[in-house]
Length: 408
Ligand code: GDP
Image (cartoon, rainbow, N blue to C red; front, side):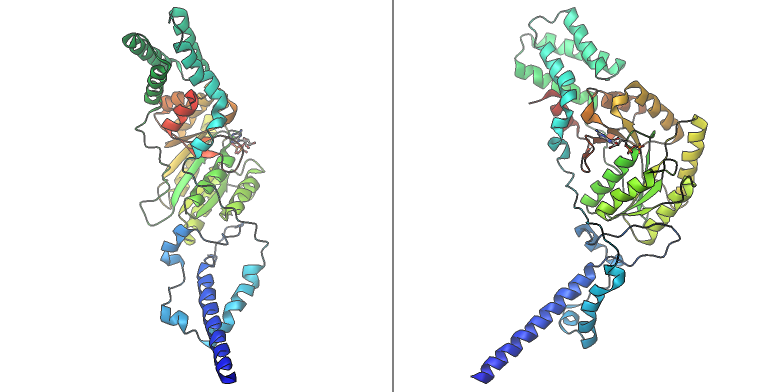
């Protein structure tokens, strides 16, 4: 009997030891990749837990071990496993808590209440006016004013009013449901449903996608770069940030904090240093560590157009030594109305903008700027900022946006 008990105990200990080894072997595979040597000055801690999407990227992992290898570890391996966890290089840095950003799907629907102010003045205002029993000239003028006040822009406003007049005439008597459907359809046409609003973060080459974020300081550029890093991490991508806004003293710290929260490295240079060299180093670092995307924040001093052109042009040229830029996002503050449109024009002359990010749409009744700026640049709005919270950046979805404007 005693022998039997002893045999069972030995068997249990053996099974425990082997399963412990399997677990530690798996844990080992989840350790972040070793830091690539780099000349860049500051690199923040890598993510403690790589995202699910990264598992497929075998080049950055240790070679996979077969079941047999896992089941039959050597004594050295068994002893090494716990030691690796205690390794001061891994354990020492005061690793900030890595956050898990919210998924991006459906963000705009979730944040639709933030568009409340736009909703009141634009969509709901239009519906109320269109519901009047007699649509006389004064009412049409009010409809026009409502659109202009919401920054839709003169030409799109005239187009919309003309189409609404025509359709309301054809409709004759109008039920509230019919009017809502009609307005929804026309606003959607105005906003555009067939534009490519994907933020292009994938390179055609075997290198990270490169995204440059431009815009006037104060528009929310750095915040947007940080939020975008979270969006990408939420989508399973690894990100390196380039703090090329060396003009604003706090910008690099701000960006680094955003990065640390989701485990993205930030490459930065000396204060007031050369933005182009920081951008270059960031892409170099991204390539070295096999990152999926490099996001570059830039300085947006509109001191003179020539100055801006020289600076951004140089950043672009220098970065392109590594490969072409995949996306150039222009950040515009939606509350600045016409000023924003002027900025858009200037930046578009300097670099080839491929997408627009409209920030601060939560604090304005000027939702119509979406239409105006797309017309102005012929470039789609791809993302919108709806608050100061870390996950308050939403992919722009025309249907959800228009529904939010009209209200349910
Ligand atoms: P930068 O100079 O363009 O880099 O501007 P920052 O990124 O520092 O942002 C300027 C201010 O705008 C900060 O206080 C941000 O929190 C705020 N901000 C940025 N995006 C939004 C947004 O979508 N909504 C609101 N309400 N505030 C925002």
